[in-house]
Length: 169
Image 1 (cartoon, rainbow, N blue to C red):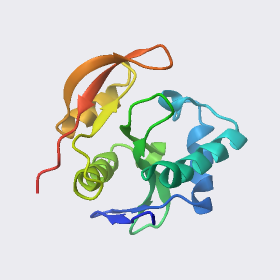
Image 2: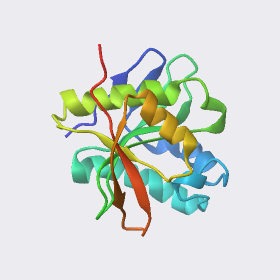
Image 3: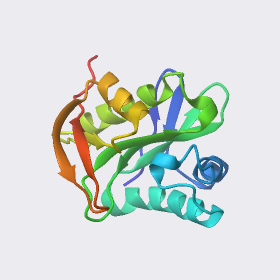
């Protein structure tokens, strides 16, 4: 299955590839930036995360897209869907620090969620995050997400799960 490309007002959501390595290295080796995503990682582990993100598309038929600013051309993060073995599928995103606070995660997430409902035909889209991840909770709310329960996860933590509705328009 070819990985689709999605377009928003300011972003291209592209299949991840080797050109994303610099952004993955910057994000995952930065302790503060990647704190909520298992970081910091070694450069080799950041490369493995990129390879895993690409491989998810081929193994599961979904994954994350690399986020490229349409005008400036640089890769600034990733957004899409992740599901590790034993974990529920989730909407996920990350942005390089300088790309935060501009509504880009919201813009990308809306496109990804719309694609999940319309192209993948999923009946629901969910997301979850660590209890202390205030920015992720805020974005879930901005996307119209509603808490739909609290679950235990394979890492031993409990998290609130949010149901994300199909975007309007």
